[in-house]
Image 1 (cartoon, one colour):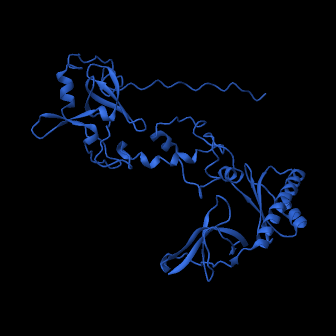
Image 2: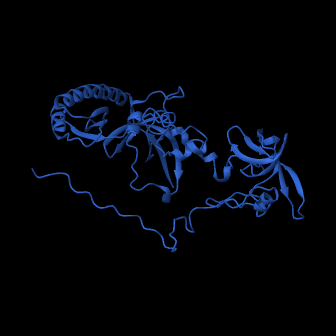
Image 3: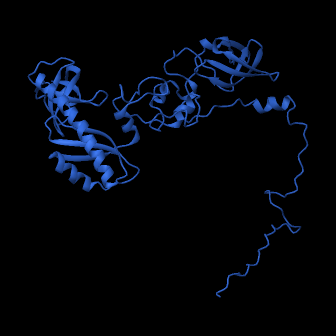
Length: 355
């Protein structure tokens, strides 16, 4: 067993695991740790806890020491140097005529490296820019090209909901978001309405996607609760009909009655019609029926007597077969029974001359 802590270097950055060592740390302490970029000052966000040896990350590094007042003052000085470095870098970019946008500047705690984050449409040759920045700051310079989602996370902003961006406040890492999540939640598929300020799909589409499982059932609901599905025979206040669509968020179902009318009713007001082993029809309330979940890819089995019932009602049974001017196979045939080939056109002469 080893005692580890979780350290974060940014307000909404990733949490890294370090060994506690011989120190006695609590959540909220500032510590000095050694990273791949050099010495850094971070904040303990996960209290010390014991983990088994097999769960310990490889090459685990131990907290160097607890940060004091002088270390905190040095961090503030580095923030002021980052602002100055940003101004100098933007001026160099304009002088060199590079098509890139500077987003953020970071300086390590021990002043051993300075990182510049930028965005660009394509590849940028910034070798001359690195040489000039190294001559000004006399330290190791590193430029990193990032995407639009990372740009929004670093710069922050307000979302369409009126709150600060999730990626800039509490999201540790980006999760994959697809247009299918918006379709399952009955949201508008207009990209301008479901995209964030970064131009990509909003991360909040992932929050409720787990509630929309296969078959229209929500994982957060109780197992004994029944959710109407399409093509179910139900009885509503105005008569019996068939479910044509289900709205998960409003907990309503659209029913096509036998008399041709359309009705929108709540799940609690719907009674499902089931047929027992003896062939008699019995009514069951929708909130008390348990539907076995369907596996992904499995199609709903339609009743075998559906076509028979259609014939008994007289649908399409009295219609004579429509005469077809085409022969079998859907293509015209000649009197001899052979298919007529399309007449080939003779090639047109070239109208261009060498004169």
